[in-house]
Amino acid sequence: MPVRHILRLIRLEHWVKNLFIFIPAFFAARLDEWPVLKNAALGFLSFSLIASAVYVLNDLADAPHDRNHPDKRNRPVASGAVSKNQALFVLGALLGSGAALAVFLSREMLIFSLLYFVINLFYSFSLKHIALVDISLIGLGFLLRVFAGGAVTGVNVSHWLIVMTFLLALILGLAKRRGEYVVATGGHTFRKALEGYNLPFLDVSITVCSTVAIVAYLMYCFSPEVTTRIGSDKIFYTAFFVILGILRYLQLTLVFDRTESPTRALLHDGFLQIVLLGWIGAFAWLLYGRELPGF
Image 1 (cartoon, rainbow, N blue to C red):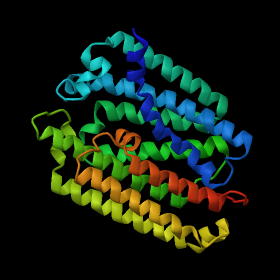
Image 2: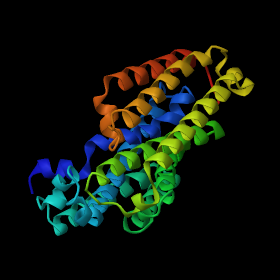
Image 3: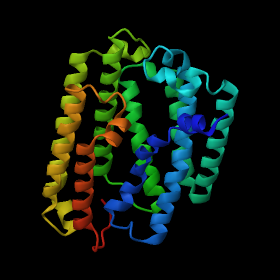
Image 4: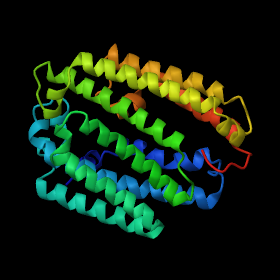
């Protein structure tokens, strides 16, 4: 089995989603502590291995449908480049190594990681075919990444982080479904959950979630609790990056139909990358050098 097929099978580019594991420590201004950074990095690797096992599982379950998709039919399992038995071997190796590393880190890390795998097991074989349940589980997956990050770094995850992570994940999930719906209505049918969606519903849902996310972020920025923790009332400046980032993502979704793969949109859109780096840089400037109890 060629290495290039294995790399495509485990979807290395999707490991960017697991950077959410660093978020609790980042907002606690503790990433400059070597033990915290080391544990976050190991947690990232552990969760990424288990997430890749999920991708392999998903490819095995979706192979018949992927063959009807203009892009996904080229995936290793759907195209026949990787056999079912080979994919199962890779899945077992990824899951075993990821779980072993999680055990080394902490019991909580193992629980969150395996819970992520189990949820995606049900997602891959049944729940992803139920509209709204599918995107809710995508949101839960991102929350588990954040909880895992808090577990390996010893940082408490606040209600602000929980709410905004879930809202962001819903936006990504709805935008992904919209992209898939556009492809499906072009004559390619591959996901049963799309029967519970249409473009007006998806457009309204994305707009509602985006609006709520911006309002929630502004409430966070002006919260006395947060400004006291950070020691600055200038945090609202970071909202400009958030608003621009959401507007750009809405443009990619509603105007250009380029969000069927949110990861690809992020990795290939320079505007989004600049906004994201600006937001991280602004927060790093506000946070670091102060002792904070958490986000």
